[in-house]
Image (cartoon, rainbow, N blue to C red; front, side, top):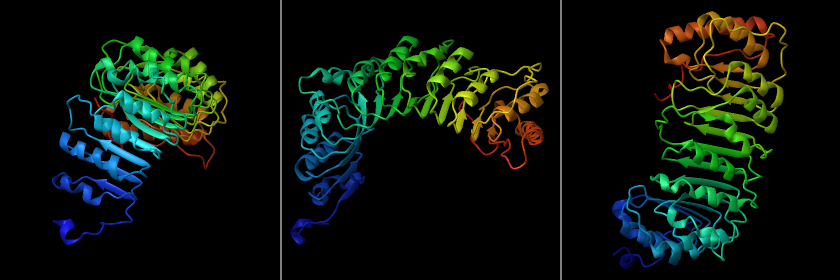
Amino acid sequence: MLKYHYPYPLLPSLTRLDWGDHELAQYLPVFTQKTLVEFSCSPVSEEELRLALHCIETSMPQLQKLTVKSDKLFAHFEMDEITHAISSLDHLTSLSFTYPPLPPDALVHLSRTAHLAEATLDLYQNNEDAHLSPAWGGFAALTKLTLGFARNIENYPCATTFLPRLAGVNLTKLSIVIRPTAHADEFNQLMSAVGHLTHLQECEICFDVIRVWGDLVLDGAALAPLYNLVNMRDFQVTWVPLTFSPQAVSDLTNAWRRLENLLLYAPAQSDYHLRLDSLAFFAENCPALHALTLRVAPVERDWRCAPDMGESASNLASLELQNSIIDPHAEDQVAEYLAKVFPIAAVGHKFWKARPDRAAAVMQRIHEREKGLVPQGRAGIEDKGRSEDGESE
């Protein structure tokens, strides 16, 4: 009816379209234009998805950025329309297609797309061997990649075969979102696969749901395959029980001397990443480090700062100790140590999510101690815990 009363193209110069109205899904073809360079949609039914794919294939030849996210489509199915739509796009620079899975033919076509620089994909068993195709193009222009793994653990190993095929690509940023819990061997295999990406500067590995790892603790040396990635600047691992020996911390900091941000979150409150003494390795070996987030091992009441320890030249601006346990009798010694190792850092501490008044009083005492150790004008220790949400239990 709309075309009957208004036969001319609607919005003939439209370049960006975000289609989110499911009640008007049938009218999508009316709004699609050959001028579109960006299109996003979140279909809630198979019919909506098929319609969107048809519009992409027939009406969006200049598309550069495509986002299709169908969280409500839980059934595993493959559509020829997906391959047809993806194969029609020769100008793509950015693609986010997380569900349903890309068929192998569509993934192979993407690998040959000359300008594709950013991609967000879920890997499934059905496309695990796509990279073995003679037509595989290798994602030559790819610089940023986000990989997700579907709801079954069987999909997790796909990365160990897929990522090494990107070894010759100038990939600088990698994010991996893992839904099922992995085992130690699988985590080690994943690290070995990531280690092939020699241009990597930013890497995030996230278990997006806190899972029960039981008594499993992963040795921090599991990251050793990544230490040839000498340009690493930002590294984040969340909800993985990694524990580093002093030697492992030394190895990491010596390998990643350009590191600017390190964030580690442990899955259980009983887990910790390293001993307090090992923080000095970051001050000694990572001059560009400006943010450090982790949990230290419990600091006992008789812990002492080395009396001959000098003040470092670290430029660390933010140290977040999460909810590390610090015995009240060791607070002055901890304050002295932190003031010497990170003399200008603001230190946050959730203090085991104990009574807020207790946490505030403890951090105030540490703050006063640091003020007496650090030259006037430098940043002090502040209690970030009072203004932040606590960690998930």
